[in-house]
Length: 297
Image (cartoon, rainbow, N blue to C red; front, side, top):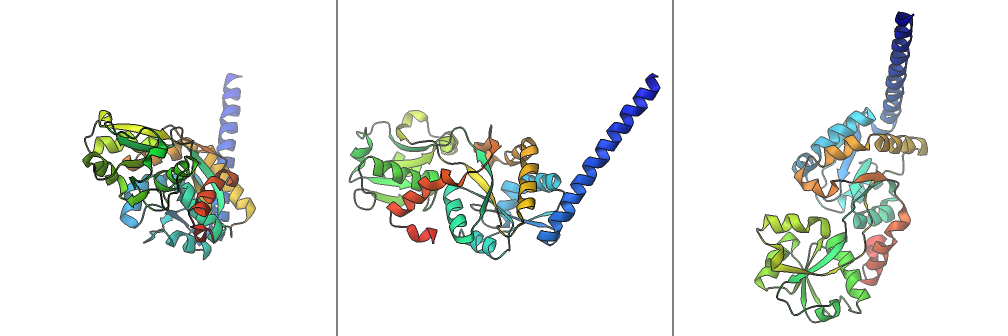
């Protein structure tokens, strides 16, 4: 009797395994119909093949395993390449920050696929610990180091903070784009403040061998919209739902492959959630307020 039960359970296991394999194979075959036998993946802020391999090689391998289809990188040479590539069907999926997403959605009608929820993703404005600047409005007439044009946490969100404090970012302050080196310029007194994402602050301090006691956080903004994966709008709805479902089902594996790279440590403790386009309206508003609405055309 026991042997018969064991045999029955084994056959059920084998049947389920075969069904699962057949389902994955069917999904892979359907994906190949729309992707020329492979899927093209890009990352909005990783330019060039070397940067993609270093930061996202493990993720590409994991995603290929989850979807059951080969993944190829699309190595853009500048930040406008991704939108054009998506629009003309040269890339299928892009990992983008909030500011890149609104451009991709506007210019290439990108469809939000999956968002990556980060628990400590706030814009912060930092000053020297001995600074006389204690409130945001006291930045009037001062020089602020920001990350780069279009960065969500290092440009657009801090601009929103300045506007909410009653400052005109075009005339009341001087903004210089210095990347992560802005912290060094702040320490030297070359600028009066510096902007950074809260979940990258400590890492940058460590990279420059600075101490938290050297600086003071002047202000922290609201929780920022999530980074997200977008997919080409030429894909059929059914296939988009399939890819989304597989990524959600295997999110632990995919997130672990992301944080295998030191560049992606802010994704520690993250989870995949549904992406909601309305969450990104704050980014659109800032583009309009700073006179850069053309980015969304």
